[in-house]
Structure formats: structure tokens, C-alpha cells
Length: 72
Image 1: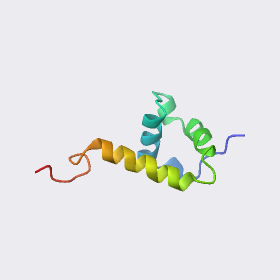
Image 2: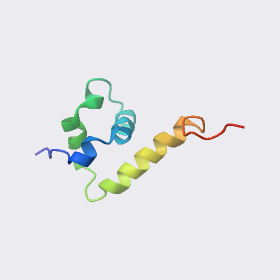
Image 3: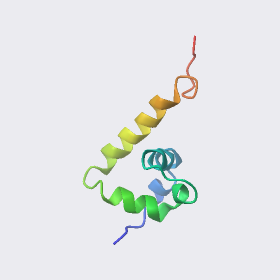
Image 4: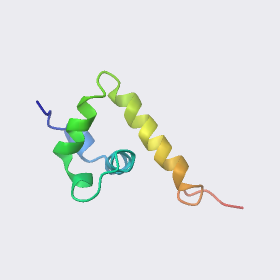
């Protein structure tokens, strides 16, 4: 059974982008909230931790300029 994502998580674009990157999803799967919810259901009871790690990994891979920091 696939859980429907909560309103807050459905609006979490950075997390969705990080999930799509980590799972190698292309369009339209990368923006399919039900597909992403199905993936995240497997993370229970550690959903918050996995979400944090995915967002952190994506930010670190983006580099300092993408994070709004000076590259001097």
C-alpha cells in the first residue's frame, strides 16, 4: 500500500530532486509524488534521517557556488 505524501513533504522540492538523483529517476518519475512516497515508505522509521542525508548529499555535490557561498 502506497501512502499519500503529507502536504509538507509534497512541497519539498529539494528532497524530491535529491531522491530522483539518488534513485536515478528521470522525468516524469522525478516529479511523481506517489512514486516518491512509495520509495520513502521503505525508509520507515528513519524517513527524517534519510531525507536529511539525501538533501545534504545533494547540497554537498552541488558545490559552494550553488549553496550561495563565495568561491574565493
